[in-house]
Image (cartoon, rainbow, N blue to C red; front, side, top):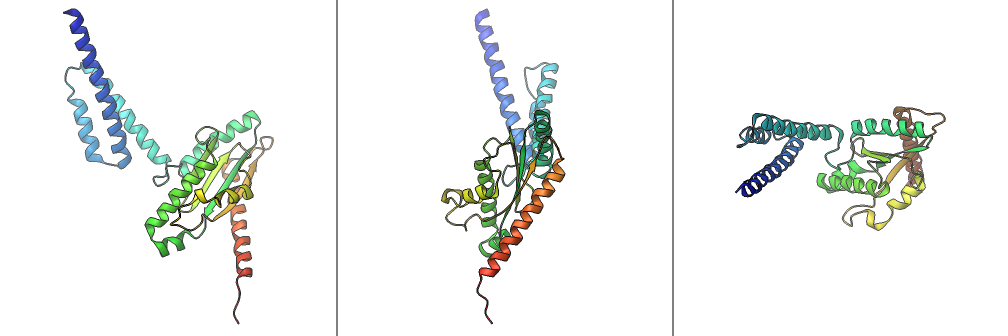
Length: 241
């Protein structure tokens, strides 16, 4: 009989743990979606757990609230369309990566990219097509920098502008990135070829600079590439008199 009671208690505890994990997952989803009514309902359900001591209920509620806080923190640092870092997330994580690079004596490279003609494509094909192109760009960034989250930081900084900070030199040049962007598997057949303006700035651990200065240098290089490309395009276009 004692053995049966122990088995029953163990099964109850397992069921409670499973339910706690389920509620935590639902709370994270509700927090990410900003669903206040659902959050209140789930928290109320936590308060009504049966068969738990007061201490157990408090512990369970604290875990759930920590999950909500974690989810909300993710929202403030993540771009909702691509799942990459947003501006704040990129700056925070990039600062930490540069600190480590300076400490360990490693070089780093900041790549600033802009999707060309996004506004024109959106006006011509539709907003949903523009969003597809942005998501496609997010996937392209993940393919370029597969160590993101560990040795690299990638983010969407504004509507059509993206950035990566990496200690790898594989895609630390404009030519390598533009060549990769021309591969057929990097784009949808329903959308134009992924056309980019790219700027690169390099971090020297012997003369370290902050993330703001590095980002400014890379952005300026990107705008110069964009200007030169537009000039070359206009010179190639026949003019009528």
